[in-house]
Length: 59
Image 1 (cartoon, rainbow, N blue to C red):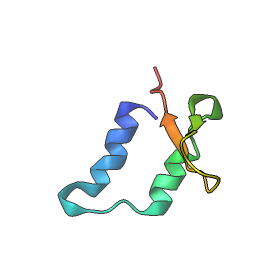
Image 2: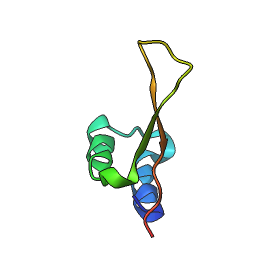
Image 3: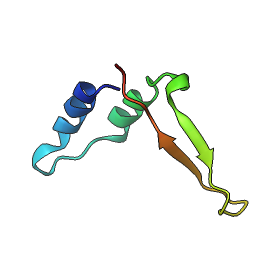
């Protein structure tokens, strides 16, 4: 997601508006897998929180 795409998405929630889950989910599934890094936090238990560390911006 580029900064312009993020700004477009966030512009939907100006003036107290709310982003719908379907809008956010639609954008997230379009991020290429090779641009998402997921790390397992070693300090968590087996119920385990997995953290989304970064999503690099497109150039």
